[in-house]
Length: 318
Image (cartoon, rainbow, N blue to C red; front, side):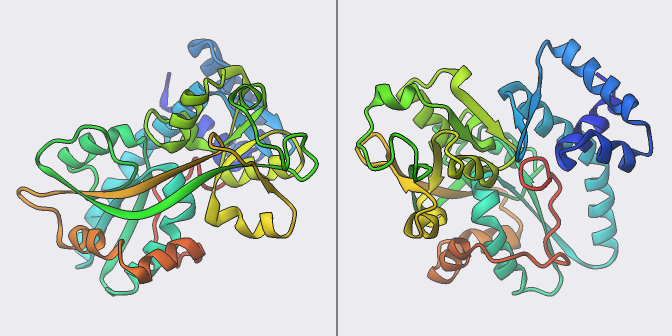
């Protein structure tokens, strides 16, 4: 595995096209295909396949995408931090689970960043299982998403927002309007966003509880892409209730009923307590649970580019 191979892979993941990746990297399409093929051979994993709405990842392919982007982003992150310090600006590094980052973080970060003219916010999409190590090694200032089961005493956590995960299908799907049993759900094609590949979180917990086999799982570049496939009747998709409510009301999606089709959960914020988190991280931790912040997260407001600098694009943008 070489940096050249990882750069080619990340470009294909981000752009969703070998042709566009080759153009960005200024190499031939065959060169990009060769590098991807080498990675597939080395890992013994197909990594991804093409669908009508983009790329669908294997669990291993999604993990490689996140890790490759993290490794390649270290240099850029260092340059950004040094540059920001030289300009007298503060940098707040936010680590977030993919579900929180896609749907809640944009509105929250935009609203929070407006409170301080000298603040730049960098959002990284991370496996919640890495939150503790990211904070303890100071690779992140604050982490937001599901709460890890065990935390170091040097880390403080605070509830941010209650949410409900529901299972939705297209209006013509056989399960639409029918209470679904665990057996029926297990037999469906599951259309999933990147959070399904994490070890922690509501979505992977739901898959484990229902015993959904891996061959029934299709993981997409984003949760929105998975929902797009669900609207076409391609399978079932877990989704945040507040994000799909408009589609359920207008009949583009149907929410399944029954005790196995919904899960209530809570997002948390985590910061260091000793010797203390940066002041901006502590303030965001307090601010995130306010009614104004929760409204911003649920609205999904667009992000001002000059304030929001995402360092990992793999699971959010193509």
